[in-house]
Length: 130
Image 1 (cartoon, rainbow, N blue to C red):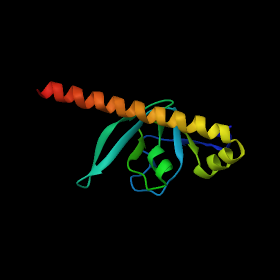
Image 2: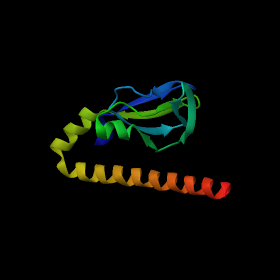
Image 3: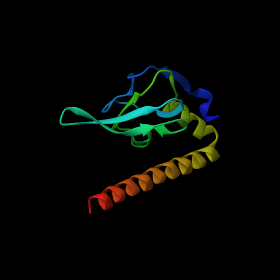
Image 4: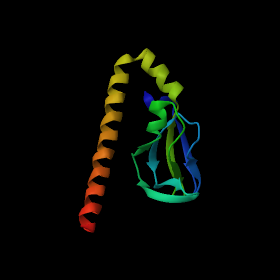
């Protein structure tokens, strides 16, 4: 039901999918391929990591209704991504209220998993330095 109104988009290597500071409240899920995650620091792009099949991005601007915080770039040719518009999701949640709770529970689980992963990476880096 959620994907019924999603657009399947295809990107080629180095195509920008979302750009840091864009006004974009859509949610994205990678169907195929790998995406590079970047942030601009001191005017230069810094690679923060990579996302692959089934991973999502855009959730911060989706949840807050603010500009995007990172740039997501296709790392290879034929990266396929579902783009799920916030308006579409809002309509689904209004007509199927039970789905909203499950969706936000999933989203919070996904974000918590990312936080745990980042904490592990920071701890590992700290232990390597000391």
